[in-house]
Length: 172
DNA sequence: GCTATTTGACCGCC
DNA sequence: GGCGGTCAAATAGC
Image (cartoon, rainbow, N blue to C red; front, side, top):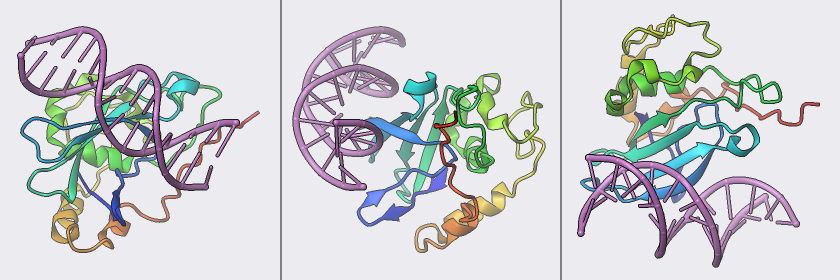
């Protein structure tokens, strides 16, 4: 789960190093807020099947629940962008979202392992399943403590220095 | 003009 | 038949 940054009247799904294109939104039974559906922007270029669903929590609209489906193959393609920030955000999501139960660990997208030299992705959900320990609890704590009142926490969670990945699609 | 977003309609599964 | 997920036309922004 992530704090849901808001800019003006619009909302932004958490940046996770990939570029997503929204393709649908649905009211979900029992949920106060609609679920948004995103797919990888490079789906057409690289037939990347990666998708994600963004669902706001009923009791805390400032927190979004992000579910990843499929894996990114766009960065595996020879012609695809090869560099992007470490999926720290993705990692946190996987370890915290309640929807992880719907995704068997062995089916988790290998994409989350990339760049981290993990390879030990067979363990259960843990903060170190990629070989790197992240202060998930601290981040979550920061989220819940300040997520609803301050946008500054976002900078501590999603470092500005984490340069936005620029798709280098025009490599030739 | 191209690309992304919105949104109603459609489809498959339970 | 209801629900979740996806499609595709219309629209907006750059």
